[in-house]
Image 1 (cartoon, rainbow, N blue to C red):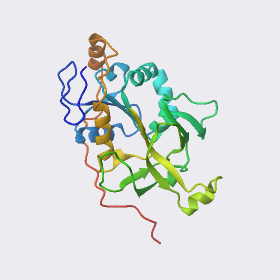
Image 2: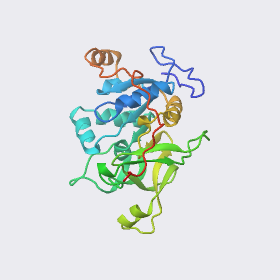
Image 3: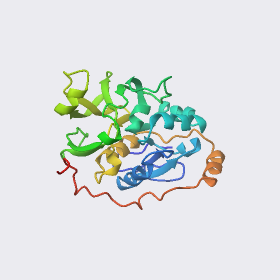
Image 4: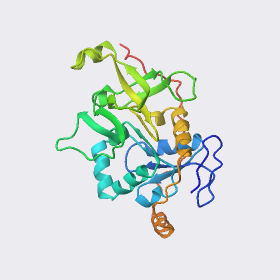
Length: 271
């Protein structure tokens, strides 16, 4: 497929589609919300449950969920080889929450006993459950360095979230969370004052938080632009793609979901 221009999306793939096509790994997590935001950001969204559905995609979003379960399903459904090929051939990939873990090269803490299979490629070290369990989930106004954006903080929602402990050369830090005193008291490294929660490295991006369950589409717009600089993936013959498509049951109609309104911001519990 031809290269899509991120500024105006005048590129096209073999079907003549003029939009940047974003696959969303749809085996777990908030894939429907990601699909909806991709459309709101000007892209075309496609649910990916079969390897052939990567065909024609310029980018891939790996949603949150449970990273070990995600890996097991990908292995069972023979997705790993195609996901790695998609990345190796220059497709843009964005992982949110568990998707961040899935993209990481290293898990320093919280890895499952016996290890877990990762897609890898992003030169970061993560703590799998840095922010604690489900009950420790929270939201905050987070200053972010979204390229080309000066619209202020992003409403970041952390749900049993991982954190990035370190990054390699060439990894750009886009967001950091300043740890409150109570969190610093819980961790071993008392000198740690802030933690990395958003990064970008060439065609890869990762966030600890969940942009898809807010009304703000800035992260999705950034990713659509990133993917627009990539070639459409052509790893399968048209017959294989047609066969996979014919047997697919689409679970949602992206774009028909309600738009989340950020008018209510959770604060401390009231007595």
